[in-house]
Length: 489
Image 1: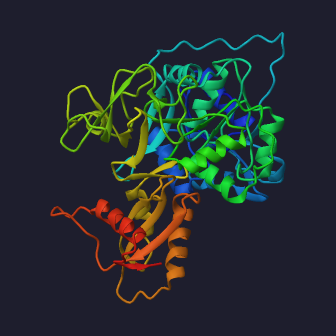
Image 2: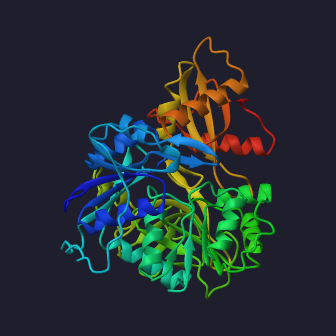
Image 3: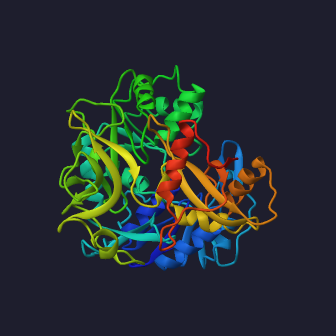
């Protein structure tokens, strides 16, 4: 299957060897790849393909996760993709395809075969579209240009010391920025890329890291929490790992110490940034003391400032970026870039990012979560509105608000729902949680897990009728200290 220059091609697949080849092939042909997480529902896939204008899609027939076979091609068909190239797997043998679709696998070019001519393009031309949740309910379509890979490679080399003899592994997806980040961070630095195709929560992943001789292992904090709870990685020889990195959500210091011990005391480098940056704005390094769950320095090439509620510099408050930076986005496909990132900032020249941060007495930084109505669940950024829209479809729900909660010691965020039930609704506590989980898994993403549901008589609102989610988060904090103001389920 041949894609012409400037073709917009969707990729909805696990981060396998074949999917990475397909991604690089689209870029080499002068096209624009639109990567969408394979865990999303058909509804969410359809929405993203339409925003980016992708009619052709590369996907795979099925996904195998922990001995479960999950149909994927069927979901992409349901998303109304016009033409689909299907990566065939052993588990998907016998699956029929539509007449417009075809199976696909990479072909190895012979040494004496002429290379395809390179396609000239502008440095600021879009080569990749990724999606990040906004506060309005619609995902933001963020174009990466041909400069963005330089940011990923630069961060990896200068801060993580990635070099030619390294083997990089980071369980992720092409649909999240760390997927393409990992490709460029490794290959542009001459390093090898190790891809694990199953769930990274069990002993099989630990053995893979050992056998692939991984030297750089990236994680999302909730994954480390799972390893610590099960003990599945204890006793696995990870002596080849020189350093770990953590991103995607705030981490628990105890979990990060545990991860360091799994590697024999190797450093865990915290890394925070965003799709809009193509990399990080704060990071740890190998030339500074490594404190669990703390960042030591702004990433090379940009600066940051923390402002308090009064708009003045502070050690705790909202963090703003100080551009310029290589790879920093300057447009959105479906929203006003200036309105989202620049309008209304306290000082000229700053760029809004939406993270709350504290600077410690030793000069390091610690993440406190989001300042807007988005949250990170298992390393996946999602807006409250997206979750509320699908839960509100339940007949028994009159109103709903979605917020996140964290343990007092810090660590990953957990999803909590405040529900105003319709008259006559009489579900049991278990039924409320199961119904909310089912509709979120079916219509949005099965990786979003509901921690708790609280049934309330009304949602707190401002004079302009906006839901006061900060007040709801405070109620959850009150519960941790022993008070109760709603019915917990």
